Amino acid sequence: MIADVLLAGVAAGLPPVGLGDVAELMTRVDRKYVVPVSTMARLAAELGDGFAVLEIGGRRQFRYSSTYFDTPDLLTYRHHRQGRRNRFKIRVRTYLDGGGRFLEVKLSGAGKNTDKHRIPYDDGPRGVLSSKAMEFVSDTLLSGLRVFPPNGLEPVIATDYRRITLVDRLGQARLTCDSGLICRDGTGVVRARGDYVLVESKSEAGYGRADGILRDMGARPVSISKYCLGVARLRDMSANRWNGVLRRYFGD
Image 1 (cartoon, one colour):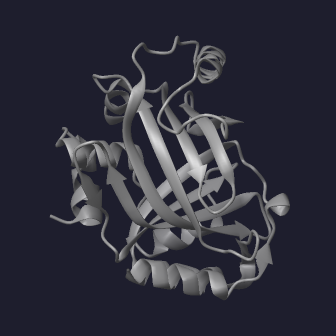
Image 2: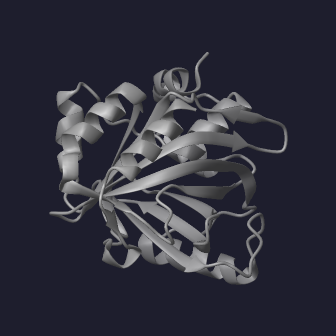
């Protein structure tokens, strides 16, 4: 996995920063890029020592596992594919390298901001929404988007990947770099290409230093999510504007 090796090298060459010194950015603007390892290497070189790398317990590369919930007719997938102004995602995310488990609800509403809400979920199974979890989902959707939670929420797909997090030492921004993405459901498994990196720029203003560097390299942000890519690939769903990203990231 070329991307894994590259990102491990990038992380090893940067000064560390602890979790307590990283802004949470629960309300932020996200920009995502799917880039080959050659572009990622150039980006890391351009960023230089202006960024630090998140380090927890001596680790700089972390494993994540997320289970996404949707309705039987894939309401949240369809809303994202259609570009609905008000949409949401519901997932249980497990930080496999000692970070615990959380129930997370991500809201996209007016403007380009993404609001993430979460509660600890260590006592809940990753594939089931307990009554307490559903109460949190309901309260979050009603207060954030003024919509009721849909009926029949169930686990649809799970994703696994590895991540390094680069933190801007001069501002409220960070960059997550993911590799080794695997998407699976009850019927199959698909793997992203090992020579590509999913880069996500997260900042309060919506345009960090990394965005400018990537733009100069010819990389353009794409409106995607791991959940939607996984559903489209596993279930052969209509993907419309994501078809190019699917071909590039997962291959033919």
